[in-house]
Amino acid sequence: MAGRTIEVSGVTRPDYDIIGTVKKRPGQIISRKDRLAYYLAGFVDGEGSFNVSLRKKPDYAIKWQVVLSFNVSQKDITVLEILRKTLNCGIIKTRKSDGLHLYEVTSIQDINQKIIPYFSHIGFISNTKIVNFKIFAEIANLVNEGNIGRWIP
Image 1 (cartoon, helix red, strand yellow):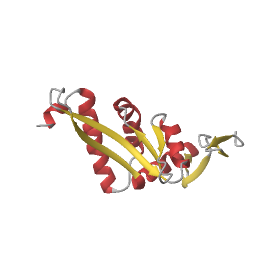
Image 2 (cartoon, one colour):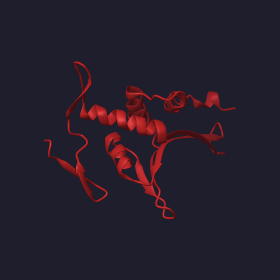
Image 3 (cartoon, helix red, strand yellow):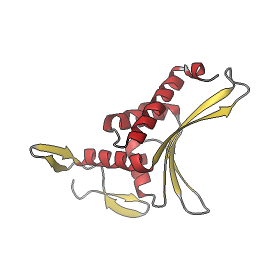
Image 4 (cartoon, one colour):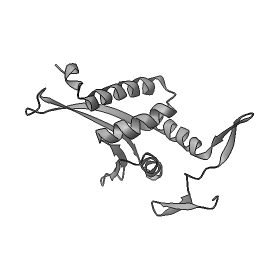
């Protein structure tokens, strides 16, 4: 299995889902898949955004729609494609003006079933990302349960 490769943006690279091992502490082993998970969490810790916005919707009972999104933008598409493959959701868009790539997840189902469980399990290091993610997850849960109206005047 060590020789398996995948094509990412037209470039053949090692398959990042291959299970390998590396020593973490004496007597402790971490799989290659877990190393990738920690790398992606660190990447998102520094470069990712968990966003909540409100759109005015006169036809809604509370007159507002809560919109959640998770996104990461980069000039190099490689890590964004690995994120999309690993999380099995979202889309990658490319701005024509400057070639910037944006990985984005807006489906409340994917946010609740894939994004939040993944990053809850792995975690973040920076206090700002920890707090922002916690708020994002709480709001996503309220939206999922249909209880967001109590938060919006």
